[in-house]
Amino acid sequence: MIIWINGAFGSGKTTLVTELHRLWPDALVYDPELVGFAVRQVVPVPTGDFQDLRLWRRQVASMALGLIDEYKRPLLAPMTLVNPQYLDEIFSELREAGATIHHFFLSVSVKTLASRIDAQTIVAGDPEHDERVRQWRRAQIERCVAAPMPQGTVVLDGEAPTDVLAKQALHHIGVSPVR
Image (cartoon, rainbow, N blue to C red; front, side):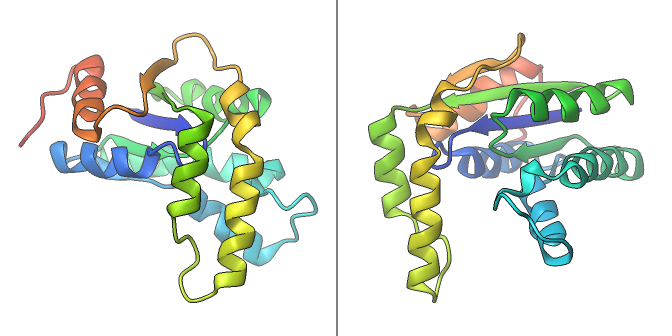
C-alpha cells in the first residue's frame, strides 16, 4: 500500500507524513525527491526539474515497489506531482505491479502557500541557493494549485491542523492510529 501525499510546495506534505508516521510507525517514509537528487548527481537535467526525466519516474516506481516487496510495509510518500502525464505514468506502473495507492492532495490557498514558502529555510548555510529554491517554489504555486487530479484523489484542507489531517487520512484508508 502506498499513501501518496501530493500538493503544492509549502502545502504541508512532509509535515503530514511525519505525523502519519508517528501515528502509524509500521509504515515506511519514502521521499521520491531523494531519487531525484540522486539522478541529478549522475545526469544533466536540461529543464531543471528532475521529474521531466523518464528515468526519475521509472526509478520512483521501481524503488517504491522494491521497498514494498522487500519490507512488506506500507509507504508514506510526500511528493508534489502535478503533471498529469507523469502522475499517470508512475501510478499506472505501481498499479500494474499490484500496489494499492491512496492519493491525497493538500489544498492550500495561494496566499498561505507563498507565506509558508517565504518562511522556510530550504538550503541551510547557503542563503543565495536557499532564495533561488524559494523563488522556484513560489513560481510553481499557480501550476500546482490548478493541476487536475485523477479520479479517486482525496482532497484534504491543507490549512487544517496536521493532527486532524493525519486522522482523516488514516480513517479514509481504514487504519487505526497506534498512538
